[in-house]
Length: 315
Image (tube, rainbow, N blue to C red; front, side, top):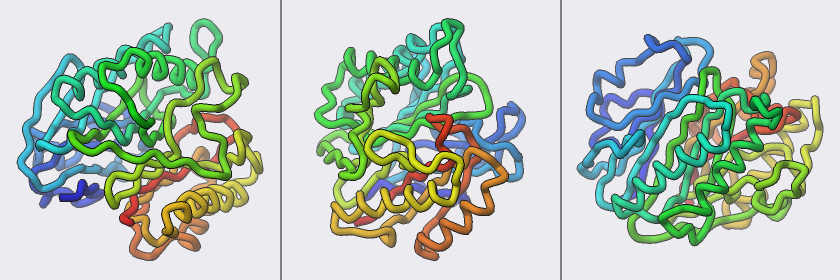
């Protein structure tokens, strides 16, 4: 049975593995989904500015789920898939916080017996800011993640798909999906340098993710932006960046004999709220009418990136 992502009205979801609540940093900003699905593992992402725009994202296969906690990690698993999430506060030594959060999640999937991690999402506060040592938080995040993978109790045969964007609250939130039996196939984009091969100008440890992960007949597309080779293109031009981002998506999909029409769920991250209308118009021009698209206004991993798009597709 395929793993499904339900966005929006989630009250009829049976046996959810986990809930991702996209909301404001305010602790009282909750939705009815918390009441409707009280025993489901939940992570709150502070990536929404207006409480009226809060929404829930629920992952499920429809199979019965066991849920629990492991240190700071909440999880739900059904015998084939596991959802794990952890949220930790910021600290002066950001890389060590990231490393320890990742290791908690990695040990959880190892102990539960789901070693094949194929998708990870990260929300990092002040992503373009600096640590107490003057280091860029994004680069320190990449260092901490790489150190965790170095120490991982599960052997990563292929890097998972990944997204790393900013948030409006404090600290780091991450959630992941992993599988018990079959490993995924990591996919790279011929127009882009693999992130794990970026030169040191982007940090001492490069970003550790694949451009996409193929899990059976599902495709999990990482956060994709206007990067060709390893360089940002069209700085300051949101329309040109949108078009390059969509072209990158199309190129990646063509390597799987597919096109944009296979994308079922799309998340669009926009740096400036003032660009939202333009980005929506660009997305309407390129994505199928029945594609479910959600928009989030957050900072992105590079200060010169204005838009980033991720997706889940059915091949």
